[in-house]
Image 1 (tube, rainbow, N blue to C red):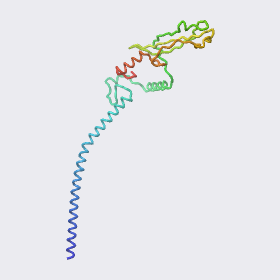
Image 2 (image 1 turned 45 degrees about the vertical axis):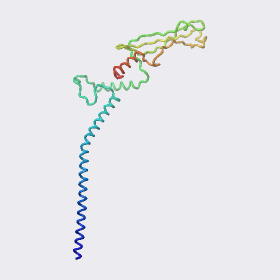
Image 3 (image 1 turned 90 degrees about the vertical axis):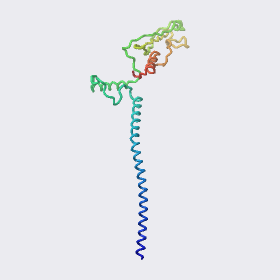
Image 4 (image 1 turned 30 degrees about the horizontal axis):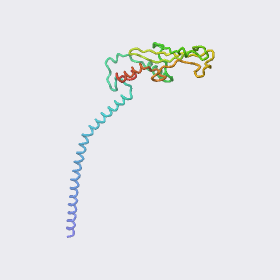
Length: 220
């Protein structure tokens, strides 16, 4: 009898374990279906997100190129233009010489003089007759002049205005007769938009018109 009771107890225990396993199996099947649905949804969303990310990267690269790179009609990835192979090819020596010239130009400090090939239009600024007379009774004598060059232009014409400011001093008293006035007198300078610059109102008007009206870059 004891063996029969033991077998029945083991049978009940096994049945209970089978029931629990079946219940756990059903739960795992439900979880598996949910995971499959999530995987399916992710497989649909991931390609769209990847395409969106690639699109944003391209927009960012284009924005950075327009903002920080040199403006040009040709962008990265653009196919070769027609008849481009007919253009003269620069040799490595010429490219190297140009780079060396650029380095030399960068090393030079200070403002570069205006090109000598540009025509000059001279404007002379002199003292008035009263200012040329010294307090000691003698006339002032011209001892030199200050020359400042400014770049001016009209559409399709560019020239350099040269302003000559004559300097005078008294050869007899060396300007000591009147301490209220300087010993060396120079004609008054005209009012300037930007002091100590080569810009004239005409040149500034042309630059602003080309930039803000014609939408041309500054280096054009």
